[in-house]
Length: 82
Image 1: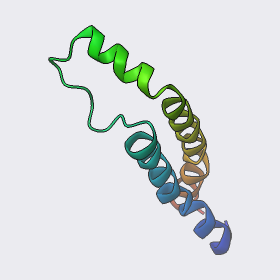
Image 2 (image 1 turned 180 degrees about the vertical axis):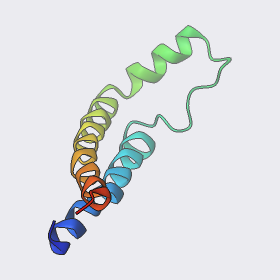
Image 3 (image 1 turned 60 degrees about the vertical axis):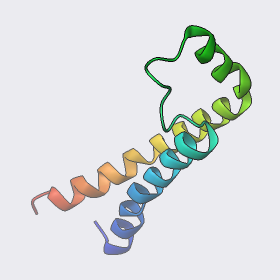
Image 4 (image 1 turned 30 degrees about the horizontal axis):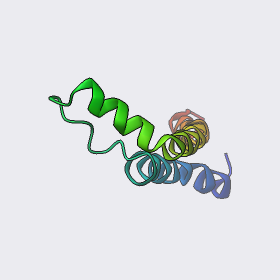
C-alpha cells in the first residue's frame, strides 16, 4: 500500500479516539459514570435532563466508530507479508 494512503488511514485511529472521548466525555456526559449508589430516580433524571446531548453524543460516537475500519486496514497493510 502506498505510504501516503497508509498515513491517512493511520490518522483515522487518533481521530476515532478524539471523537469517542469528545462524545462520551463532553457531549453526552457519560464520563464519569453514574454513582453505583444512585437511585432509579437519579438515573431517570440524568437521562431526561440531557436527552438531546446524549443523542448527539451517541451519533458522534457512531461516526467515530466508523473510523475503526480504515485504521484496521492500515494495521493490516502493515502486517501483510509481501
